[in-house]
Length: 222
Image (cartoon, rainbow, N blue to C red; front, top):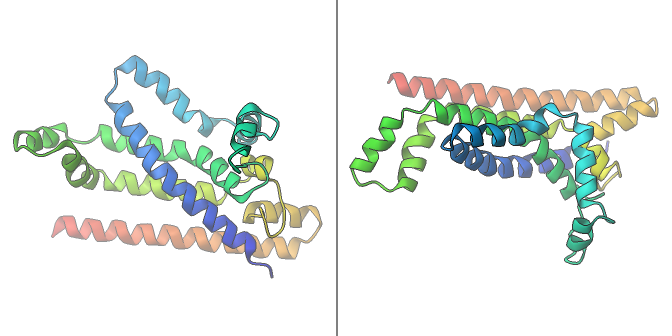
C-alpha cells in the first residue's frame, strides 16, 4: 500500500493550518475593531469561500495562478508554480479552510471582555503583551475550535485541490483524490481502506481536542 497520499494530505493540512491560524486570527482581530459597514463588507469577502462550491474556488485559483495567466507567468519566473504541485494543494486547502478559522476566531474576540484589555493598558502593558498574554488565553477555546476545524477541512479537501493540482501518484495525490480515483477504477476495497484511514485521523484529532478542553476546564475550576 502506497502511503504517499497520507503523507501528502497531512503535509498539506498541517502547513495550510499554520497559514490560516495566523492569517485568520489577524483578519478576525482587526475586522472586529472596524466600523460596522466596513466589517460587513470584509466579513462577506472572508467568508465567501465557505459558501462557494469548492470547485468554484478551484476555478478562481486556476484563473489566477494558471501557467498562462499573468500572475502564474510572473511567479514562474521565480520557479513558483501552484498548478500540479503539492504546495498548490496548500494554497487550495488554505483558501477553503480560512473562513472556518476566521469566523470562529472573530466570534471569540467579539465575546472578549474589553475591560480586561483596558485594565492592562492602565497598568502600562504593551498592546502586544495584552494580545498574547490576556486576549489569546481568554479566547483559547474559540481559537482551538477554529484550528481543529481548519485542519479537518484542509485534510478532507477535494474540490479545489483536485482542480488545481489534479491527481498524480507520488506527486500530488491526497487521500481524498486517491479515494475518488480508486472508486472510479472500481477498486472499492482500496478506496475503503483510505476512507478508514481518514476517519481514524479525524477521530484522533477530535479526541485530542476533547482531552485538551477537559484539561482546561479542570484548570479553571482549580
